[in-house]
Amino acid sequence: MSGPAGDANAFAEARQRLAECRGSGESYPFGPGAAVFKVAGKVFAIVDDAGRRISLKGDPDENEALRQMYPAVTPGYHLNKRHWNTVDVDEVPLDEVAAMIEASYDLVVASLSKSARATIE
Image 1 (cartoon, rainbow, N blue to C red):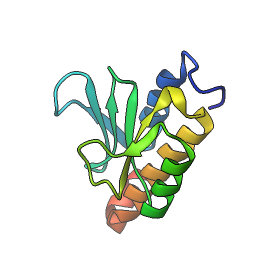
Image 2: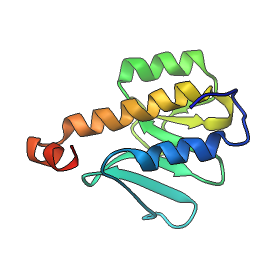
Image 3: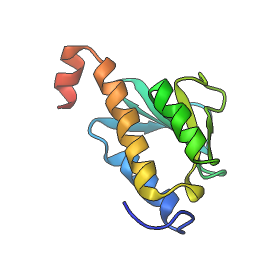
């Protein structure tokens, strides 16, 4: 994933990255337009298709640093503000969005039981 922020394909590439995470599944429990990505039943991303935003889990200290670095990274919309960020994908470099996706996925996988981790690895 590379390219400038605002790239016409940025959002599509970010969504593709989410779908490629091992063991991930996409559902629409909140209705059309809000995709939820889970691994082993645990949420690691929520995608607002209309707003081109993605909410991702993160370490609280890293979340705060990202918010300071990028105005387009804000506390998680309708989520725990310490543990989740909402990212305007068009305004953040794609490499950074990819790193946030990976970090969110890794945090959730690390919280799984050993047997659940084994089923996705």
